[in-house]
Image (cartoon, rainbow, N blue to C red; front, side):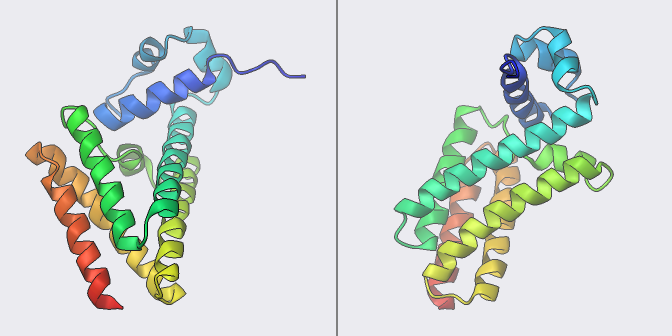
Length: 191
């Protein structure tokens, strides 16, 4: 039986946070070691391919977190519009709590590495596809065709990611809330 991965998750969690706040390129391995509390040797043990492997793991972890959150919200929401507004509310809250230092969970790593790094690109595609499928499923339940639901889910994701950038610059959750409210209004008239 293999030994449990004692420090791996701490390394990934630290990378998710640091990449989201500082960006991929600006985060060094020593930053990740310090933030994780893991011995430096653990970094090389769990990620022998180096920082790119940590980036891939961080994108996968952030993608899972987004999908878990959106799945939970989708189960409680009475409509896709409500789901998007609830998700936007959480995003605005998290941004405010971080002092507007946080960004989109996967954006910095993907912007800096896709399509050059195939593994990071694949992790990003998997995460974004999962998020889009959850939104599209909720939209389909609301009566949209599968094709239209997929397109609207893509639009919602783009709007929220763009709103996160605007929120960080403006140091206000208003852009996130406006994007969600306008998307919900669009859905109400699109059916």
